[in-house]
Length: 339
Image (cartoon, rainbow, N blue to C red; front, side):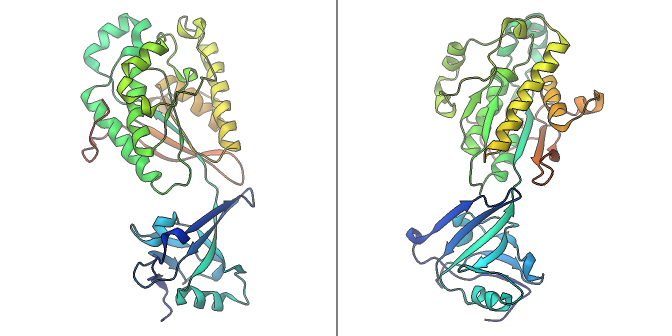
């Protein structure tokens, strides 16, 4: 088999029952995965590797859908560190490359940087035709629904996250404010990332009432399979949070909520998706990024259906903004079936 600068393994599965994948956290900075490939000539492995680089940087450049590597959960950017328990070194890299190209039954160990994330997502667009009513009846604001465009925006959010977590090992946690518009937005996300919604009262929009839990679940009776019914809010809403507005209280309260999620991210092995409201998300964002001064520009960026992915740097252990999606776009590829 000819050596290539970039190549696609053309090996196949022999028996799906023989597939195995094991994860271990050997370092704070990297996570290691050991994958067993079967020798075959029908079903290709379906990965591209950068053999043009030095052996210390052999990484997966692409994983092809429907192939063996994809079925095993191999991901882009994974770095090869050993084959059949032979650690890559300056003395054996040529032999290891030969073994890879030979495509026999083998066990490959990969390493990848641990990059856990917190997503801060504002709910999709509200039905603006009801603005006057809910502005005058803030105690019932939790009932404010999405507009038709908001439902499309919720689909767009779900599509972005579905693509992000398509081959992910651990489904993300999904936390939502106990308001109709945030839950509606979260239902699409829950369905497409295969993770149940956790209702967290600590994310509610303050001074806008609180939905009775029994009535809330009765309203969503047809979607109860998408809720984590066993989850109990870590920050139960109190009367002073629901009714009187005090900026100092809101700010301090949201900092505690932010700290709770940051600690969860550090200790766990799952990403966290938070679907909430503009002011509360802004306060959480400030807390997790260390932004002390108020920024009107940063606040205004948190528009309907805006998404901000903050990734944990494995070296500094600080959360850094990795990606964001501003405003909701129509998503015609996903059926809006959860309304």
